[in-house]
Image (cartoon, rainbow, N blue to C red):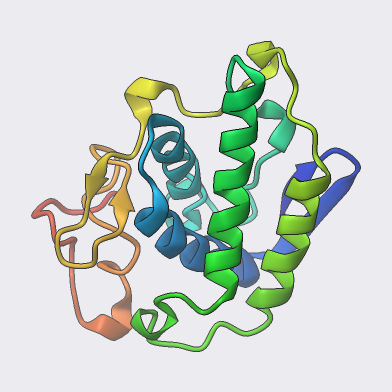
Length: 178
């Protein structure tokens, strides 16, 4: 199974492993760049791409289903945030914390950035389905790893649950659902 991230006429079709890597490196960048409400909603959307919770081959999103904002300025700012996050992730930002070298992810991030760049956010946010509401924003941060988390759904960040790190449960003291 694969996971599809789409926008306009472009798709990024990733295997389960490639999706995990793509979301991991993007989440590291988003966690460090997020400063406004929309950014934290995008972080929540990324946390919902966790295949250990949502299921293999069952994640992905369509840019057309985002609530990009009510004004042209809000939409431009949201799009710029996603592009900055993709660029920061592609630069290798915090990859040393992953415990592995992410193969081919730079190509996936560049293709994602091209998809976002060519996408025109709709003026009407009525099509926004599946994009987290302001109340669902990922405003909690794993104290140990400085990564945004979708509490109360998850107890920590994706780094807390990596078997190679020898950590069981998350850094926030609650067991993660399986």
